Image (cartoon, rainbow, N blue to C red; front, side, top):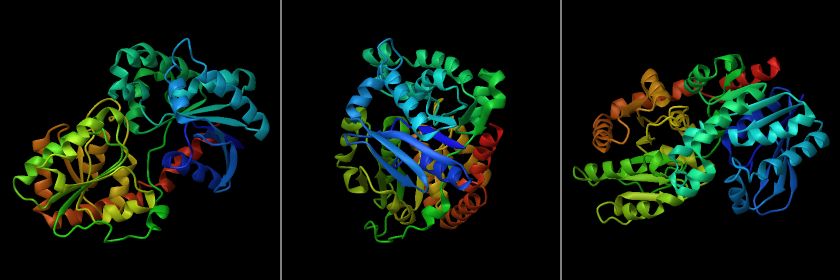
Length: 397
């Protein structure tokens, strides 16, 4: 069976898609990925036996076109539908596998002629995600993006797909209540890490000048919606007790939050205790986790963050670090059931600081929580376990 994946992004660096490609290839399927190549020419490459077909399109142009893809001015979906038709014919695709709700329309348009089985892979609760972005609440955002209109599109698009992949059991429960007739089409593929790949990276214990600091590590998008500013407010509280606390933060900054981030980074009370990088390659991640004392996922509690667990949570666990997570249901459930960390109330800086102090003052507890997390990932929160649902889906097609 030839599986044709449709990805409105560059392929490299998308861990979820990369892992799925590897798992399906290893299960005996042939995978072809049609994706973008920002500002560059079309090219074809091999990845673990899969074919990655990239076509050139500048990111700025893509973003502007996709801004309109839920309006009467939507040319982007039509443009993609032509690309998909050509892709299917050239590579004899048997099944179309679209990533994210915003690519559903293109596949539906193309499939009117192709008449293939289709899979929709929801990386997130997209309408809820839009509600969490600052730009979607502007006048233009309300007119052109309209999260409410995307809720209607979700209702329209989902029944047109043969199978639907969801991020978590929690998200599956939510959609099963909304669309009970589609429940049998829902499959869960969680953002579990590729353990073998991560454990092969070398660990540099001197990657930062730690000295006697207690390092609190966050990895991922830097934005208000991710709870970053709650962390900084907690750091202010912690520094009243000791100057040994440091926050290590790595990830791209949301444009809407750059000014506020700079205010924290230049705050005389904080700047000496924050290490911030916009980007580091994934092969350095195990080193940064290893030199840290606690790893955090401070997501603000909302419908999107209740739909799944960030990949970084399991990556932290793999390298035996205690976690501090906000009380978003999916990540709270894992932390409490596996006894691998503590939970704080979303957006509550005082509670965050209290839990950090608890961990700092109980090093033996931290070691035990780290061991518990590592054991859980090795036994059940990994791609070898996740692939069972993915393979089952394709067997049922």
